[in-house]
Image 1 (cartoon, helix red, strand yellow):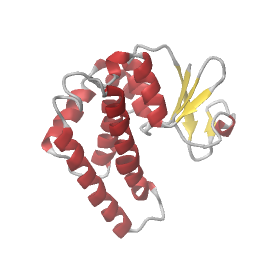
Image 2 (image 1 turned 135 degrees about the vertical axis):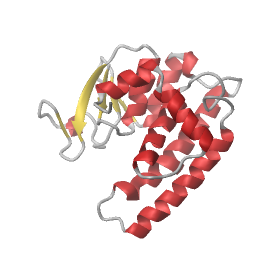
Image 3 (image 1 turned 180 degrees about the vertical axis):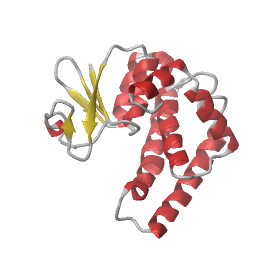
Image 4 (image 1 turned 60 degrees about the vertical axis):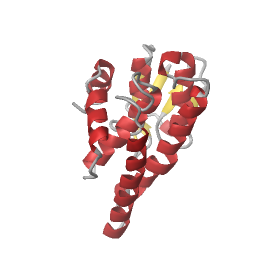
Length: 195
């Protein structure tokens, strides 16, 4: 199994989740500007979408999109699934919220053509979305005492928030520090050259 990633991109969530699952996988760094791999091959041959994450299995099949990859990891490693009889669906619910309401809201902050007004509006939207997530925390992690794949995704969004000067609610600051301290997270951050 091979994870195609870009340092600090949303693929960091999948990188963390794979370490949490104890999975054996290779890492291949993608230059998102040129859509090339370190060996010069075109990333578009792996994923025509042109963005990370992409997870390639040993049989050559490729899975993309955080919601799909993170859900697959949790399905294969149930300790990373949300608890309860609706756990899988609660996990999908929060992954969809993080992906569509938070992740996508960062777009103006990464777009070189965005105006300051666009960027400020994006920061306000992200703050509101993070306030909602903050109100949903039921313990040190989103679903209580145990980490799930959704926590890895939220952690990356909080890294981006910090990088863009978006203030975090107190409990999300504590959450971020708690997740960052996990050995698996430290390994992923080191692999990506982020610490």
